[in-house]
Length: 403
Image (cartoon, rainbow, N blue to C red):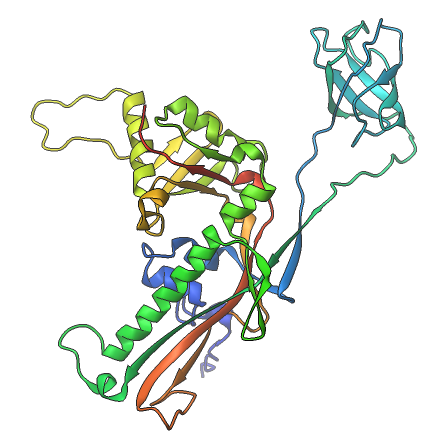
């Protein structure tokens, strides 16, 4: 006899999309091109748990040490260097002069915060005088056989805090309206629930982009906290050049300069120099027109269509995948914006047990309201956002016209 097969009901072997998705996952499946595409994408990027309303995390950026001379080195014999700062320099480091000679020196001792001793000509280039103001960049380190363990060095993390924010949306219908059959579409109750979900996702999406953190306000005697979004995080914690305002016209060279900063740091080896750019309709038109004006195309006799449409563009250092965002098209000012996002560097953090809860009341609801002839429900999410590397995000305002 053939042994009966025992079904495996584990989550690992469940049919894809059979198990209930998160609210964000449901939104990206139900409305992938809707009001909250970035919020929907967070379902695929992984989320975490916030343990307090003030959520703290640490961001680290790779260090590339260098020293700049503040006193000229008179000849190829001197071994004491006076520099602006010896921060992140350790004995054993190799430093390459940015002067024409390209001499390499090996750090012997770090005497103070502005002084170090070196071994000169630690390579093929002979030691020579080095002018004041020349920078020497670290090009590795070198140690002798059977050497003593070197001093430890670590990237000092920067503590970043953000606050959780409570998002609430509700739907409601009278008992009579809920009982009426619609001619087309779903029942009024179903339609109202769907609208509630869309509004809830759109409110979270708006905060992901435009939110500003606060913890100083109270309502009805209770604290209200809000979270920082992408734009505010980049403004406060990112390099100054990553938040820019375009001029009256923008050409390819200017666009590239406004985006160059996001590639100074590789935040994720899998993602490389590839970013998502959320744009308004006006910004997308400007970038497409920059591509059209930068290149050459021909319309041949007999063609029944013409024009160019770019969804991806490249600069000398990386590529951008444009996504036109309905939220940015909601007004003329935001329509001119472009927001560059590095998806692996961000995630949503939900307060424990507060990951989009649904409560229903009335007929069939989990709350019985005997005094009101109505049905309805509400959605509640409490979350904040982590951006572990603001340097790889960028915001451009006022993309108005292609040059």
